[in-house]
Length: 98
Image (tube, rainbow, N blue to C red; front, side, top):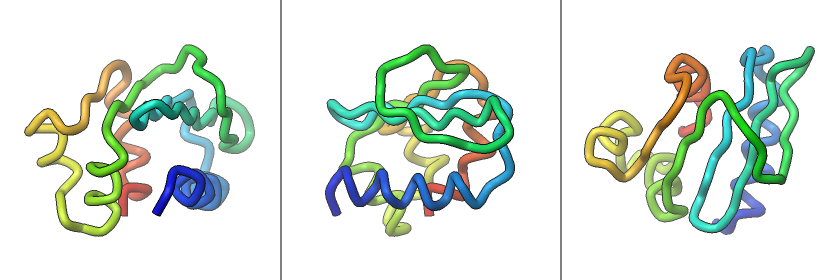
């Protein structure tokens, strides 16, 4: 799976969720994807902008979380995923990691 496939999956999942009430930035290797749920629906933005929460990880770790090979909480605890900012927003997106 490449970054475009992950982005397509994020887009589909985000559209199916209620607005998250803020902006969450995913920094995946050299790529940045922001889920902007501050309006009436969640939208994906593909520029490095300010966000209420930033989740930083590698594509390898993201794919392992999505496949179930690694638990998202264990990835955070082991430092493979770093979260800064509003942890509540990160928790709203936990379902997107599977």
